[in-house]
Each structure stands twice: as structure tokens, then as C-alpha cells.
Length: 79
Image 1 (cartoon, rainbow, N blue to C red):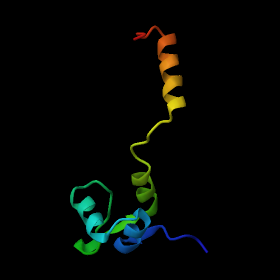
Image 2 (image 1 turned 120 degrees about the horizontal axis):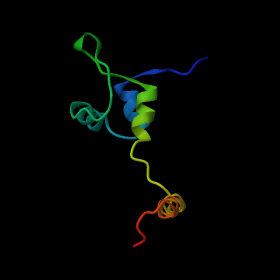
Image 3 (image 1 turned 90 degrees about the vertical axis):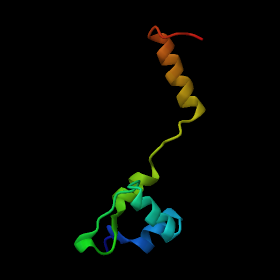
Image 4 (image 1 turned 30 degrees about the horizontal axis):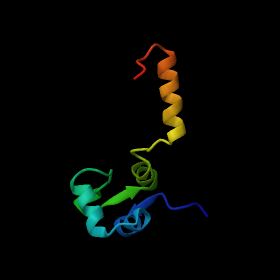
């Protein structure tokens, strides 16, 4: 059986580990993508919820060091 791709608010809140009130706050602030057919209930695509969860990536110390080394190697400033 194929996994569900369209989620309702309760399922989305559960997936994000937030309250439904918080989820509605995110939608009213347009911080998460949602769909509102017929102007009624909010629905969410699972792929949009995953993208929301993975935004604002925090790089590891090794990734930052590699970027700094590459930058210095291209003539960047060495502080």
C-alpha cells in the first residue's frame, strides 16, 4: 500500500511534533505551504512538510572548516 501523500492538519501537526494551534499559526504567517480547497480545511503535501522540516540546515564543524579552507585557497582573506 502506498503511503499517504496529502495530510490533514492533525496528521501534519503530529508529523511536525507541534500542536494544531501552532500549525495554524504557521499557516497564518505563511511559513508552511498549505492548500485550502473550497476555502474550508487546510491540507498539506507530505513533501512540503518534509521540506519545511529540513529548512535552515545547520552545517557541521567539519563542513564549515572545509568551506573556510576552500575559500582561503581561492584568495579569500585569512583572518
